[in-house]
Length: 374
View (cartoon, one colour):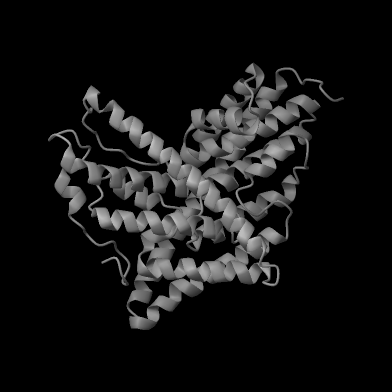
């Protein structure tokens, strides 16, 4: 009956479903890690082919985007991040379709992100986690209200598994999916998210997603500087979101171009960027890690990376493949932070920068990569 609760049994179901979501999330991250390594090996091999080698990444990403788009087309709601669909199911405006979504999101997202599109893993993992929650609620024959809460909680568990961040998964559920804070929802999400993170670490290990070195504590008088930086970063994020919507609308007007052909064309463009420098494509984790470790890039190079990835992300999302927006935005935030520091460092007293001035202004080329930006 609608509204009937399932007692304490739902917390056991949340723990079991969270464990499964963690294993799926860990497996997805493991596959993406090896796909990134394989892509790098292909690029290195292509670099030895001379001028014709640039065709290899173009063909690789074009084929990957076309295949991922074809997978997404075969299942309703499989394209994109999937988070709007999770929210629609929560509002009881759509059906979950969990049996079809799980394999489509896993393999479609793996092909799309692994081939180099500027997309994130978090969207597919949220969608897959919610699908697991839907399946668990049905199999356990939970009451309608608890099944709905479990669905949202497992979406948060998927996000937690994506970044090893259980509190991030909880905040995502309360602020983005449900826009409400209920004690039962909070407890269910915490149970699911913690078990998901623990089980994902069994697959990918327990290290931090983004290792951050020890940094000196900035002086108190620099707080207004950080406030100004936060405002500009927020404006950058809003502009990125507007560009995503605008790109989707523009691509939707190309009604005479088949969707798979459009995805292949977008993939070819991103592949050409990857031929110029691998850090211009992909989800952005290697770029974020490099910046957090000290960078070694000029302000001009940082500006180029920022501008290119700012456009490449929305373009990749318009390919209608499984993939999220959050991880590329993390890379943009890291780029903007590095660029802001590089520009402000000459005007700040010695010792207040997060990194020494020379490290930001001493450019070392990325590898592999053989055209431009060197």
